[in-house]
Amino acid sequence: MPNKTIKIRRKWSAKYKKSINCKRPKGFSQRQHCKYGRKKTRKNIR
Image (cartoon, one colour):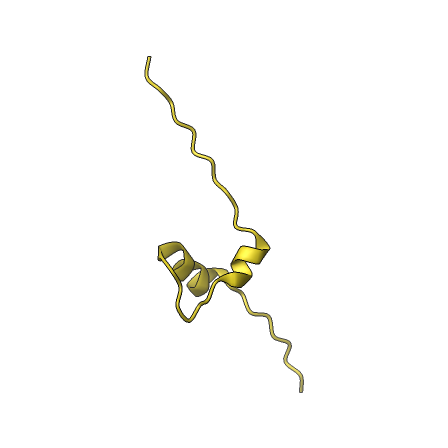
């Protein structure tokens, strides 16, 4: 009977996301978060 492993996906907390330095990301996941995950919202004030 083969052993089955269950992968548990953990979500990043908001505190962890804010702590990521996008000027010097550590590792692949943080680089991808800085590239695609951070959405900056700006309101155009004219």
